[in-house]
Image (cartoon, rainbow, N blue to C red; front, side, top):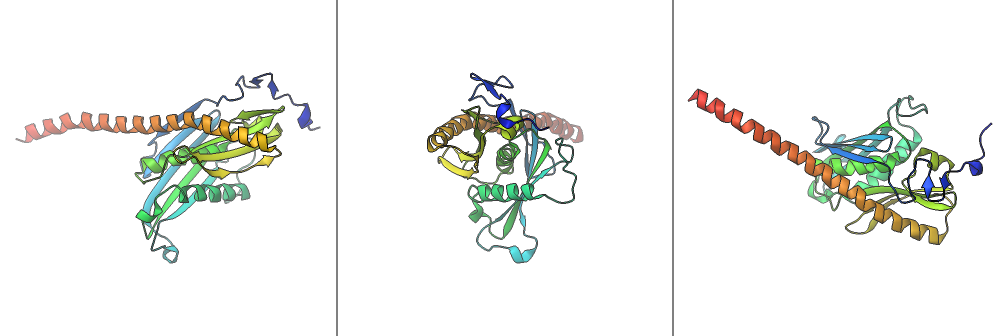
Length: 260
């Protein structure tokens, strides 16, 4: 028999089931430049989530009749590996949820990338969930934003994702899978801290106007930490590149001496 949602105690005072406070994010690690064949890439490890993003382009449009002479076309694909969770994701082709998330991600990046700089081209953004535990669309778009910048594509800003919702009558940020499934509400949000824009907002459940206003304040505050992790990942990637170049220079000089 299924357990009554209202009987599940998800929060005790200010502590949640995993020990976090109401405004605490799960552990977050972002690594940029993890794929050699992609123009840009990033791996986000957010709690138990592991999401890989790759960016290809700007490149020639295919099929050609979709070419826009004034701007680049953005394509976003979201998928979950068959082994990513206990649910079955082994069906052929994307499911309804994956198609929906791909479309909302496309909307985010169409409003973030300077598409007018790359007319008659396309940019493909792929997000692959390797392991899931709630909030994968947030993790995927956060990873994709790093991957786009890693690809050298001009953007208005790095964008950050944070979810907010209500469990046990309390507003909390960054809901995990249990809190998402058993809680009273869940709002995945994508924001730009530079412009204070909300690029994605999806509400599941019931909240008052005061709850929504307070929740958005929590989102923007938590997004600051996510942005720090994104910037750190990109800096570390280019530090690795500089170190590799520096290591290769002496070897090249030595070969020149031997030839002479």
